[in-house]
Length: 244
Length: 244
Image (tube, rainbow over all chains, first blue to last red; front, side):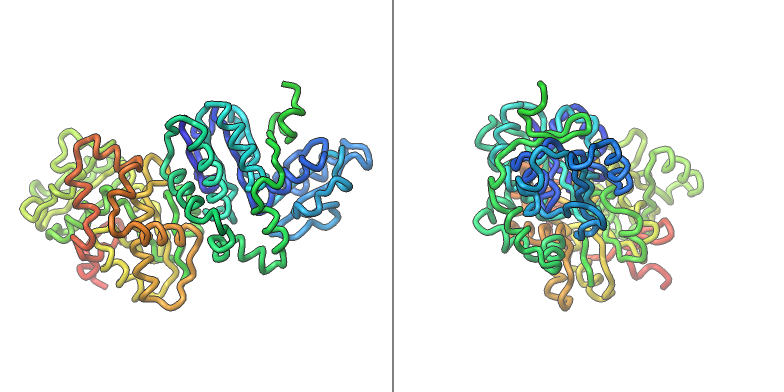
């Protein structure tokens, strides 16, 4: 079982993803938000790259059956129901609804993996559930970090490291690519205090400056949303809610 | 002064390089080989991406004034004078000659940086000279790692870390991108024994399997070739040998 990590969607070539298990990570905040929505009972999430795409899609849904969700450059979008803060995705808000979601980095990463065998959403908030699911597949697995502005983002890479750290105990002799080794070592050395590791990283600092400390705290809470989210045929659901 | 690291040439967008000081790193072995050739008195090095390009260029040179140099997938190229082993680039072989060089990863990385303000070649073998030169420029600096097969390669990233480690003592409050932070921490934690860090990395293992242990040992010898190599107008020379 090979484990490779790519620091941004653009760092991976199409052939690197084809027929692999692809694990998409945007810990601050898209995948944390998606997992919060799933555990709080939303029907499904449909990720879209462009704002216009979200608005066009919404015309196919009955009033009150959907929510417009997302952000641009950390801020909520005018006229949208929810921003990209996982704390807004309460059961009261999202239960049984279809969420049409666009985020700056995360949804691009999710839609990058069209030729994958399976696409899993991952954050610190589901790290054990994700690792258990991946270990059960026994397939070569690729971690696609969303990155920040197309750049290597430490928060995402250390999240990949957290999953790989667990896989090392669940899988016999996994073969780790160089960034997988680096990510796992970074997690292992800092697992006791991720905030100290990340406080000088670009995305973390930007979110702190935007007053989103509570969001960061939630997103870095291990196993706060212990579900496996799968992206298939354009839709994200909890794994058990797909027909097969 | 901003310091950013890109794990492969493809991870950097054109705008990330434009008007920056760009430091190209392919420690195993292209930049180590180039620096060995420079310190041993070659006239200049002309990097080319394709083998055919090298052969065509050679038609413009007088017999005995040039050498065909390079490798594909670690092996020397049929009919070429020198492979990509820095140990072959002795004064006896290279003095006063023009070297026409193509390598699998390194020359691609060098030629990627056409819009840079200046392009510097870097390896563990010139880490202090490179850091001193970069510190004197007082400009935003981007490290382009050659990578291995288009993937993050730990050997190159830790070499960037070695330079950044020195810059932190020479430059006031440099602003480090996330991968720059990771690279510097990786170097700092392993500076006493780079071989143990790298022994499980893809490129290092591949070279060991090819019997190139002596090459690895040379390439990871700090300051074995303490010169500043510059790529300008298609040609690599020691900095002082350019007219201005």
